[in-house]
Amino acid sequence: MTIFPITRIPPQSGRSFKIKRGQILRVIDPVGEQVADLFALEEDDRDCRLSSGRSLDYAGRIYLTTGDVLYANTSKPMFTIIQDTVGLHDFLLTPCSQEMFEILYKHKGHHPSCFENLYLSLKAHGVSGADISTTFNIFMNVKIDSRGILTVGVPISKAGDHIDLRAEMDMVCGLTACSAEGSNNGRFKPIDFSILD
Amino acid sequence: MTIFPITRIPPQSGRSFKIKRGQILRVIDPVGEQVADLFALEEDDRDCRLSSGRSLDYAGRIYLTTGDVLYANTSKPMFTIIQDTVGLHDFLLTPCSQEMFEILYKHKGHHPSCFENLYLSLKAHGVSGADISTTFNIFMNVKIDSRGILTVGVPISKAGDHIDLRAEMDMVCGLTACSAEGSNNGRFKPIDFSILD
Image (tube, rainbow over all chains, first blue to last red; front, top):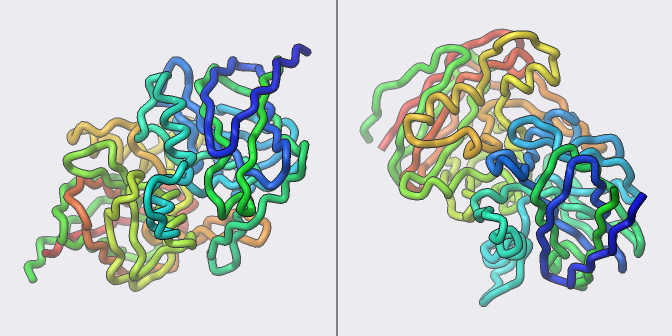
């Protein structure tokens, strides 16, 4: 197995990259308690995009972990989770955005956000903001009670925890080190990733 | 108040229509135990589309009812729920599709589906299949347990139950009488709707 170099995504920023079918995307929390939002589109068909709704429907669960598949809107498998040292990720919420900080936190002025970082990273690959829907929010701790109320907690990921996702098609991906205070225990940390094949 | 005529959507089919800001979309279950999938796009900006992830994030809950807002991916309000005689709707799952029937139910051959019915109805308005993401699944009974496991139950809607959604922008909408046996207690029934202003 060839291990490609680890790329570090600095706090509150994002990266885009391509991955080939069969390669493995490893996403690592190098410090702990940090979220990474992942979005993906098929390389040769940008209308084929990551879909929370399809993935949750086919899994029959909202918490996806080892053995589960992330599906596209076309119902094609995009990733299979083959290793997961954390086991708690979110697939309900859209990436944090400027508007989110204004609506939920009454923030004034520019706030870095996963949506902006994904959009700016993926723009080079011809991806528009409207193409980016609900992301797979790696290490994000979103709990739900019996009444359906959502609570965003501190990620349970510790330094060195990681998740391995096997690509089931050739894709363009965007990945962030999340910008939201409320999702990362108030401290902004980097996210590491590498591609193994 | 002018009440426009009621339109009946026959079982396992769909309709598209336009609605103006301030008008009210009333969706009625005329028989009971029937789901209606709703999708919407801004009339003048088709990149502005209904977003489950934004709506759930801003509500902080997965079950939306009277007083809650359905948001677009751009974080603009699309609908406000102003009356709801049922109080149980789904906003987690994508509309049922040919692929869903094949993957979850091993169905062979064509199966009518909300995705196909939305796509065929909205095509006349220049909407592509890729534009249709997670729908607001009116009257759909999706329960979630403490482990995050999803269960699709019989809708609790009875004959004559309805939900009123006030349009917060000019929109193109698609609406179905759902085609999935598992969501409608095994019987396919119509859905009625009208637009009030």
